[in-house]
Image: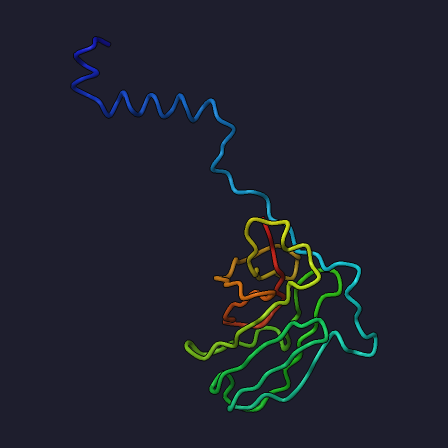
Length: 167
C-alpha cells in the first residue's frame, strides 16, 4: 500500500494499529473472575437460629435482621397480604437465603436487601456486588448494588439466594 493510500484511508491505518496492539496485549479488558465474599472465622452464629429471622410481613412493610447483620427492609405495598418471610444468613459466605422462594414484588415497592460485609474479606476485592445465585449454585444475575459503610444494598424483584461477589 502506498503512502498516499494511507493518507486517504486513515481509518484503515488506525484499525491496523489497534489490531496489532490488541494482539500483543493479554486481553486487559477481560473481566476478572468473580469469587464469593467469605465470612471470617470470627463470625459466630447462634446454633438455635440466630443466623436467621422469620416474621409475618404485612402490607405496611417491616424489617427482618439476622445476628450476622444481614437484613431485609420491606416498604409498604411490597406484599398484598400478610405472609411469613424468612431470612437465613450463610455461615460461610456473605449472603442469604430468602423464603418463600419465587415471591415477587411490584415495581416501586421492592424490598431492600442489606448484606453485611463486616467480618468478611470484601476489602480484598476491587468491586463487590450482590448476585442472584440459582439452584445449581451459578451466578444468574448481577444486581445493581450500592455500598453503604459495611453493607451492600440492592432492591429485590423476587426471593431466592443472594451472595456478595467480588472481582
